[in-house]
Amino acid sequence: MSDALINGLAGAGGGIIAQLITYPLQTVNARQQTERDLKKERRKLGTVEQMYQVVKQEGWERLYGGLMPSLVGTAASQGVYYYFYQIFRKKAEVAALERRKEGMGDGTVGMFSSLVVAALSGCINVLLTNPIWVVVTRMQTHTKISKKSELDMLAPDDAILAAVEPPPYGTGHVVQEVYDEAGFWGFWKGVFPTLIMVSNPSLQFMLYETMLKKLNKRRMLKGKSSPTALEIFLLGALAKLGATVVTYPLLVVKARLQAKQATTGDKRHQYRGTLDAILKMIRYEGLYGFYKGMSTKIVQSVLAAAVLFMVKEELVKGARFLLARDGVDASRLKPS
Image (cartoon, rainbow, N blue to C red; front, side, top):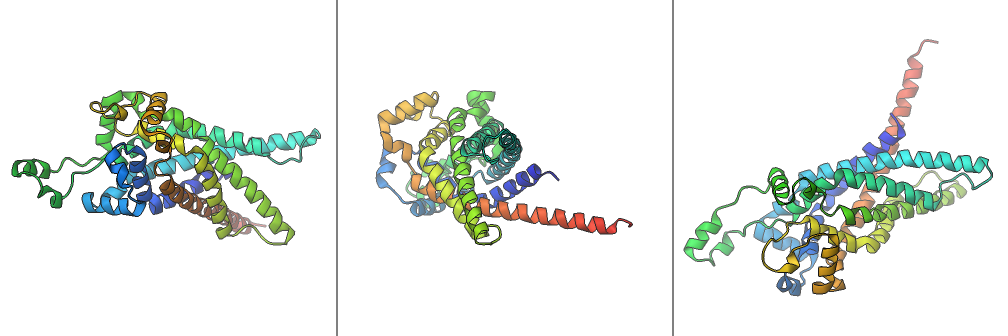
């Protein structure tokens, strides 16, 4: 099994576990980013309060709306990203060794090369998986009809109509809705800001690998083995925190474009593209609009990244150990 495949599968496994743990935070954050109702904004509910509100009004299952396509998207994204990252990384390492032979450099991959490797891997990942995230964003921001406690306030005729539960807002329904709205290219809504957001994982992995390299050197000087799971957890958290703060406004723009667009009513709810969304957000909401839900995102991203790195590294170690053991066992079985 190639090292790229091991890292790809480990990345997918780590991403799924991180997704399961932090998904309710993602749902609340998506709603915070796409909220354009000034009355609701004035209430300024905290993350925990919003989660409670969703459970009370729509049921706990809405915190996990779009979970299945999200898990598919996470596995696909992490798998694709780590697979191509490992391939490009190996090419960068070979190039660095070649430069060393020519008397240039120390033979290691520098920060700029790491950034380019991460950016290329990220671009491939975005182009291949964007349709999945359009579906996930729609499902996360879909609001279910209120429960019976709120129907009592309606007139009898209205209550009867409101009590009729609509068909489940499933993946198939969302796919058809997106296609009816914008055709085939509707599944690539928000791809432009998402491509720019490639800088997020690029910055994340650059920071992570730089800190990991320094940590490894310190441990080698002290005669210690490879970093522990806790150290990997903390490095992943710090790297993700730095990257998230820088690129968050693009994440909000992407969510606005991928969420269901209002075709009538307030013009603030209608975006024709990335530039139109940015200009309308500046005009109607100010700079604050670009940082809605940032505290929730930081908690979710840092926790998810830390879990991802920790699980991924442990899975890689486990896979290599098993492969090495199988190789030793196979050599013992060969006749002398």
